[in-house]
Image (cartoon, rainbow, N blue to C red; front, side, top):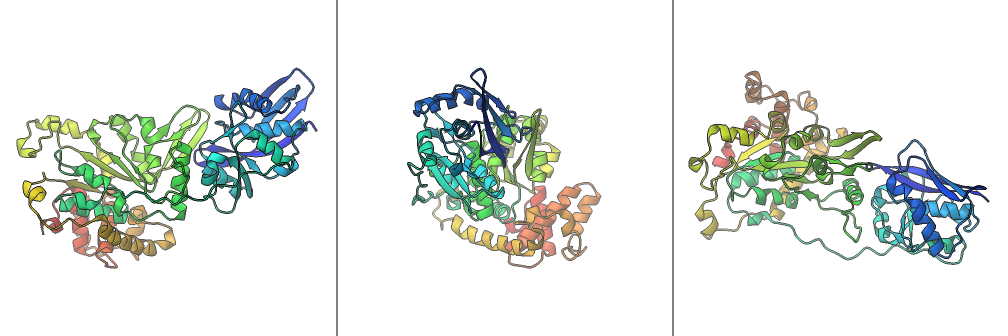
Length: 511
């Protein structure tokens, strides 16, 4: 037999596509040609596969070998095709019976000694195989635990090419995936560590309950970073669908924990302010990698010292914040990654950033405007709440008082509010208030009475509030009502939402 075919999976962003790996052996000058739009790493598989076959004790066919990857028009990236290419070549040469590998997806990179090494993106690859009707996969031993996360598939593992050949010949068995380790995630930062800052804590609770974006302004040491780092501690655990999405993105980026477990805790990404555009939203030549925004999907993206970031990098956030996805177009195709993350930004009020506050600032008004000008109007318009934090006083740090409310207590209220919102918007498929389209809130049965939204109408008429800001205030009002256990927002909720939106002191904070 001079022809054989096995199955593999190629990735385009987070979406996988079933790939047929064909091998044809014919008379001619000995060579191996790869077709089907392979990238550089895949083209180099010719040398890896040949060395792995020889060092596994098998004869390399001394013929002209053509390996085709179907569909040919789909660009192929990476080294995950190595194992499938080797199996197809050996099957075509008669060294490996093809029947045991029929309707089986093969994934893995080959070392020159014939070992099968782990690869990135196994979880979305296996998920794509299941969607295509494949129920059996063979993966590297290092990826076996990760692959078992996908329901509806039988996973077996290999550590060497020699083991795969012996399995096909009926001379050995494949490896079983390891059992799930008994591990517990260490506790994260707790809100009980934050001294004072009641308005900041309250805004954080609203942000968690409704999925709203948040901006924190204040002098150094006022607690901006501490508050942002504790937002994941009051968010509910991810459900199955969200956990699979997040784990798949971590797998593609190569940052999945070694045990390959399903990620249940909402992710937290805090890129440095010197991060590039590609690091923030994704990019790269050839295989486009997800950026920090996509790695924060269903979690929190925290940008500290945001005025120090380049203006172009920040402007790239505008479209993903609205659509919840990143679409990256290159000459060889378009890649899309989910990016429904909560944005939290923190900034000092000016370059001198006096700890004593504005009254001790030595910056001119022009310098202050230029400093915060990196946060453009269109970007700020997409942030639901702007909170100005005051310096922490000595009494709040040193005077013995009752401990601050811990994250566990706040998380209970957040979960209750999210449950109410999810039940209300179940017909639309929205999880939190921040995802609800504005037109749904402005139409019956969810439209609020004109007397309750008068403050928003007046602000919109005089140009203080944009149409986007109007809708975001409505979403905030619904979240405030959910936290208070009410079915619908009242006029006080709308006014409070407007104050949080405009960065004004709220009546609740004053109380």
